[in-house]
Image 1: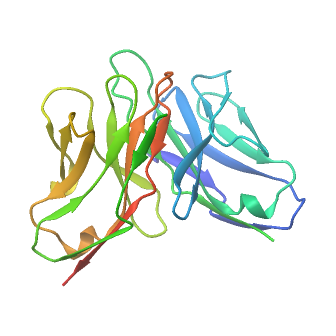
Image 2: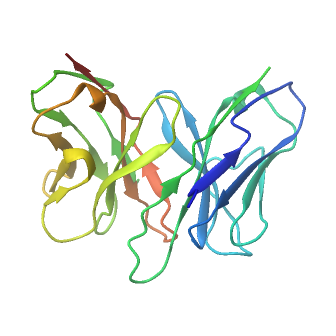
Length: 115
Length: 114
């Protein structure tokens, strides 16, 4: 079991460039999440997908789009990167539903710098 | 408004001494509370959670947390700190509205000195 995997680990972009961050989980979880981590601010939810085929905005969705490709994969896209999107991005997953304890499991993160 | 506060940016403790990392929360309804730890250049690792039941919750690596409803607190504790416990610790609460969305505190850096 690899758990939650993310690619790439590091990325440097120029302002205006686009890129997609990939996330996959092999725990048969139904819900997946994208967070960003900034110093002194903890983690903030960007988007989430409660189940395959659904996505919803979190706390800070502006400038991002997501795709729940299948049950395993949940990607985050930056269409036109801005320096304010320099951050560490984490993907997480959980098994959501009655009777489950809803603990989220996190990937190793992607460190993104936008110049 | 729902929120989590970790009032200390950093906690310093000597190895072998007890440690406490503080967390207070504000949420409507019964709180679901979590502690995560982040080691340098790593993702977050789950430590423990409070859903219901005993106010003292035991977790991984010898950590425990005490839920106090009247003080709306969920402080993380360990009786004897190790140098290897040095890391960034996050408290989180499940937000209302379903789908297990989490609200995180800003994090507390724990430094354990030999």
